[in-house]
Length: 295
Image 1 (cartoon, one colour):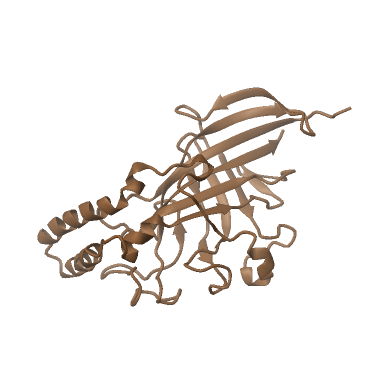
Image 2 (tube, one colour):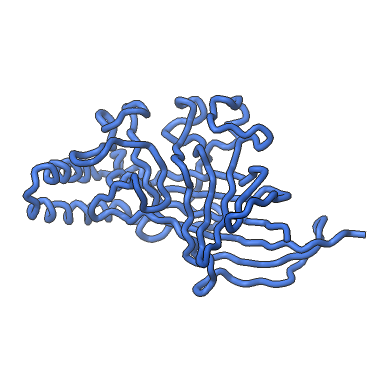
């Protein structure tokens, strides 16, 4: 006889703009200002830190007329199931929409996550494993969920150099088609080249009204870069960069409403990124995660 047990489930859909201030080829990954690549820290800005920011917090460098950093839950489902061994059935379903405590919840990667490619030995072009990768979802009324991904949950390591490269290549980013897993780009990503030209016009007006010498120097650099906007130029061509990360949130423990739990299965997650904005030093993401809680 099949034993039955109830489970609380969520499927969260999320999207938004992310900042990652990275140097680009042929600069080395540790270059602090940007010299020979096409991304730079302009006068008045701190050094490039390579950290991936899902939320507008300390460390984010706001540039005028750029997308605002922030990733939020935009939909999904809360539901209960009962059963096991493929015999599960719904006992309740509730869409995550306006009025739900997790609607527009903040989605974040705590710590200082970076694209780690083991010095280019995992994958080229700055995309490796996002490490550390721990996904947090912060809703209303103190509701929050957090769990980590590890390349080997039975041997959790913070430093990827402690893992064999054969294991890490299972989780490197994959090339993604425009509508992979049904996640179509938003209009402002598809028209990023036109947005670059619009931003150029706005920055030229801002420059004309700016008296501060440091701010003017920063604007001059941004304006000169935005003028390089032909289709074959990397600044424009990289707008089409697309990648898909498939990380199971698989740490042995998780946090739910500040209480530690021990899930009995991985939480499946897909993360799509693209629309690289060389001026904003950021990109657009869409993703989903399935959270399964034992009642």
